[in-house]
Every structure is written in structure tokens, then in C-alpha cells.
Length: 329
Image (cartoon, rainbow, N blue to C red; front, top):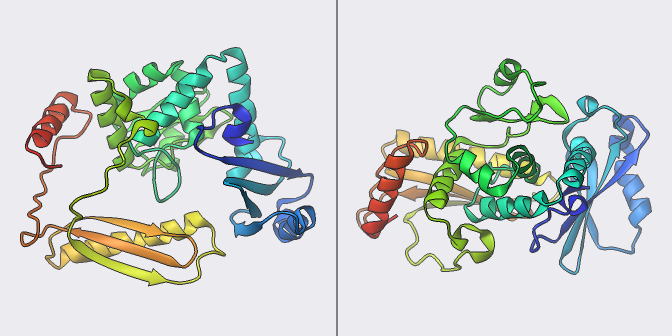
């Protein structure tokens, strides 16, 4: 399943999803899933377990990573939960690409663009656009350039009907009140495919799309990103945590670290510290960290200058050009 099955996997992303669909109740799969996987994999391959809606195994071998997911054999996507929708998504995208095979290259371009500007990934640590959402958008707009052009004019709340009028946007807005972007799932119109997209990532894509449409460049794509290290690290305060995180779902760990970062950032601002922003990280095994960026006039004077929102494209581009011209960003 997933991008590998659709032919839309980026060349440098060596991962596959294997679903073990079982004609059994969800509760039974949750109870017996780990035992079933152990009996299948045995001692032949290196693997470790993770736990989400169901236990699943990640096999790691020679740079390739495969997630082996036991899931109920669902007939109706509306009855599926979480990753159980993946088989329906795979079948939907494959059927559309069989009709318009030329869209495969456009999807790969769009994914590379999203990754290049830092908004690719539905994981909590990213808060951006999933691979499936990227595929749905390119299929909807019928091309890479058309999707980027559309993105350059988005203004939240963004609502895109990819279901041919089957979606109830009022219901979706009530169900996802904090989502700046609503894209109904073509296989289940009651679900928002863009639920993972944060306002920050949406803003970054709108601004990047505006800049790209004005002056296209290879540098927007992830394969051509410069690898220059940061010369002057931002001053700040780092909180390092140590624990056993390997037996928890990675997204749950990232979510907890993110919430800690938000609380520390707000606490710092409330107490008068010149906190600019925060970042968070975990190796998903034993370490986690939160970094609070500070405005420090002693080492490097960093001044925060809020710019216009990216959907005010003319002002946003002028602001970017002026700041870059001053040599700081």
C-alpha cells in the first residue's frame, strides 16, 4: 500500500507499507496483532514493534524500512479508523492515475516542492501536507503547476471540494473547528484530509508558491536544497529530557514534546523573557529536547519584525525581498 504501490514514492525515500488485512474484529486484531506478526516474521528479519490503533512492526534492512500493519478487512471506508483507510486511499489514487498516468510525474514534483519548502509530512513534528493530500490536490487541479498556482492564492479558511459536491462543508467546519484548511477525503467525505495542516505550514506554502510563480527555481525542490550549515545558532535555552520512548507511537511522543514546548514558550513570554519561538526534537528512542529561541542583544542582536500574511502576496513578497536585501532573515 501507500506511495510505493501508487508509483508516487520520492526516489530518496526508501520505505514501503505492507498491510495484513484480516477478516476479524478490530478488538481481536488489537489483542492478537503482535503475536500474529511474530509468527509471520519469526527470526528471519530485524524488526521492532510500535503501537498505534493496532500494534505494527517496522522491518529495517539495508536502508529500506517497511511497516507491517495488521488491520481489519474493511468494506466501507466510513467504518475504517486511522491507517485502516490506507487501502481505500491507495485504490482511489491508482484508479485515477490509470486514467491520467501523466499525473504521476506532477505528483512527484509537487511532493518534492512541498518537501523542499519544509511543509511535507502529516506527522505532529511537521504539521504539514501528507503524501495522500499532495496526490489528491494534484489530481484535483490536474497538474503540478496548476496546484502551485492555486496555492499561491489560498487564504484561510481554505476549502477545496475534491468530492464532486458530496461533502458537507458546514459539518466539516464544525468537526474540525481549528483547521485552517478543509479538503474532504474523496473516499470518505466526512473526513478532512488536511486535518494535519497547521496555519504555520499553510502560510509557508502560500508564500513559497507566490515566490515560485514569480521566479521559478530548482532550489524550491528538495533534491536541490543547499546543505549549508547554520553559521550563527540562535541564542536560547534548551531543555533536554531522557526516557524510554521506543515503546510508544512516534506521533504520540512528538505530540507530547510539542505541547511541552508550547507551555514553556508561553511561560517564558508571560514572565517577560524575550522568547521569539520554539523548536522541539526527539530521537524516538531515549532523548527529547525543547529549544526556546531568545532575542538576545548581547551575542547576536535578533529583532523580530512581523511581516504581512502571505495571502497579501504583493506586500509579503516586498517584505521578503527587503529583509533578504538587508542581509538578515
